[in-house]
Length: 448
Image (cartoon, rainbow, N blue to C red; front, top):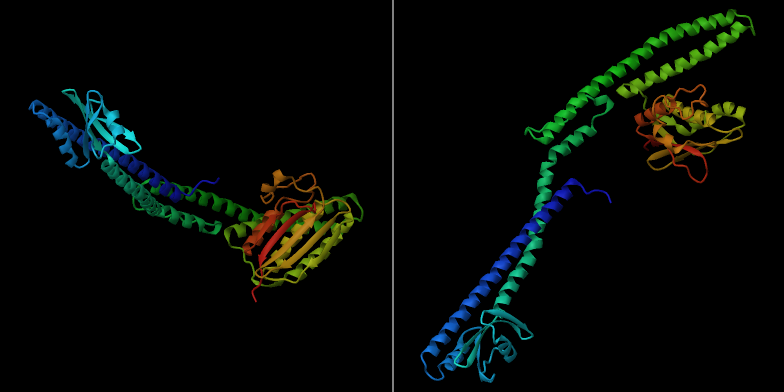
């Protein structure tokens, strides 16, 4: 289960805290109310018992029984008089006889529970008579029940209001975080000069924004230094390489055919060409990182481009008896730089050849949806181990250095940068039932 968002958690705990506090308050007030009500009932019972004792002290015959009958007119209070032999002398019309008989012997106020209801009773014995005083607790129970019902209705409402308040307060408290998030989302390699807004109040969020801004300043300095180094180094290397290449070509024209010197010069020429490709790719990567790459935005017939790239790769693939299948290439058109998009397709096809097996195949498909163009390049072979997938698009990373002759680990990273500069994406697809290693390029389709 994924953790809840901060606002939801604040609202949840606000409701819990408020509900717990109100529940404790309700329990306390209910307990106090019951105690006060019972105490008031006990005072009435004791007062009635004193009146009966006073009547008995007057030594008038039948005075106690008369006073007991008078209690019939007291709301909720009733009495019953028993003789010494247990005969019921005065029968109250309200208190059940079962309660009255059970109350005999309770000389202190006691609560009795029966099917007829709850009664608070007190027993007084005088002159061979036992008077049972009973107070019907129905009214007390009704008061407690009404209050409990009110609490049961009010508690959820109060907890809901607390949750809403917590949601609103959390939203206002997190507003600076939301602004910082939006600002951070807009920080790209070409906009490293952007900073997070710092709230005017000095609190934890303001301190965090200042720390992140300080980190961004250090990152910007380091990034700009690396960017300048890559661009300057590429520029500085291009000129000597061009000169060396010219010298080697001149030497080749004067060298004897099939001589050892010509063989060495051809090897040097091949390495120079490889260094030139690396230099060009590093320079293009530096420009893409800086957002300074001048990519044309013109209609490109992607189907024609893909078919042409497949025809070019067939010359290399035929040496390994690899079949190139471009039969599933549909017509599609995009807006972009044709030269750079061709570089992407050739990089993917070149990798499909290098990491294929003899007698294998390369399958190139192109599909056009309403708003996107889907290009896939798949090849047979041993596949790419799952633990290497997260590193495939890192610069200078090679999945199998022993088999990557002539490679330098920039092809996939450069291809992804070019595709992203065109507003698309490049990814390695999960292996399916076909057993092919498949890369997918998604580009926005040309509107209209």
